[in-house]
Length: 494
Image 1 (tube, rainbow, N blue to C red):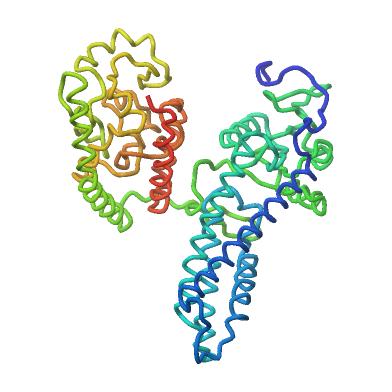
Image 2 (cartoon, rainbow, N blue to C red; image 1 turned 45 degrees about the horizontal axis):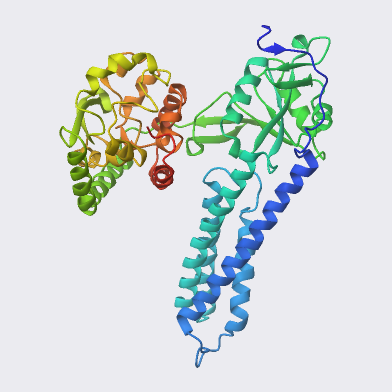
């Protein structure tokens, strides 16, 4: 093994000062769950009271045999029990992914349906207006408060203030380093790698490190190593020595220790809805559905894109007129900038943007080539001298891309998709990167909400390929929502 991978020998360190050890991390997780319970109780109480007030005002219902003074708190309690029953407080889904929101919505809808059916069977005439308003407000409030709590959780994880799982990674060296890189790429997920265990043959006579991760033991002493460094999660990745029998035995050894066992398959960048686990002869087989590039869902996406683009153009006409006037007054040249880009299937089209540079920008590019601030096939400069005064403002808030709504209306682009590449970029694509052309490019996408120009070429490609493989209408709505925040912050726009 190269010295670049396996570096200076070090003793197995205790948990870093100021960082939570296993029990403290567990306490952080329990505190977060308690916070969610308090928030849910508060917002549901307000929703139930609002439903009562909207339906009956400040007077008790006349002629009703229903004791709403008992029904209201009973509904609140039953709602909280329903959330608990559908594992909405399971710390394995809190703070990451859409499953948390999905469970909250499912619990509320199932409870509403159950109450409706029970009321019909028992012939109990609880006010439908009261129930409808309560459930509508309550479900929306639950999702909003979960979103706000998640943002607080992510901020705490970014700052290193705890709230994260302490992870011991187990496997071959190459796979350990790959998993460490993946987990650190998204620190808000809450997996803090604190150590690694590798095969016996790779261990030196003294303790060592993989990159900056301390090697704390071999595959034969995983439970002891996890306990020594205060890990609360063991993440197992690929290794020739980790047979099925040894992995099963590791699960038995971790029973009753409070340490979770996580198995990280070699399958990466595949979203949950495409993955299905089926037990066959005691073996959990992972079935991966093929990406969907045509069919009814694609037709719905096309319809949604074009309809939304038409409505957005109508609403934005006054803004477009003001921006066009500002561009005309600021510098010489046309208002719109046309540039050939490559779309779905390699078909070229003219993308429309508001002009943000001087008219001879392309001619000046050769002089600035040595000042490129990004890697890969793109040219980016944080202080590009070709950008006009108005252009800097337009770029900061992505207002220069509003004319692309016309491209969406014409079916050349989508609202959400990969970044539209230049022909010169596509000419240098290898086989993997070319998969970006399987779907229409988008006005926004994962690259837009994840840092824009601050992203490296590799990360931008990874995000685009992830979208191509795992797109969905729900994901599109989420990206569009996040785009507003990314645009307002203006981070990575230059």
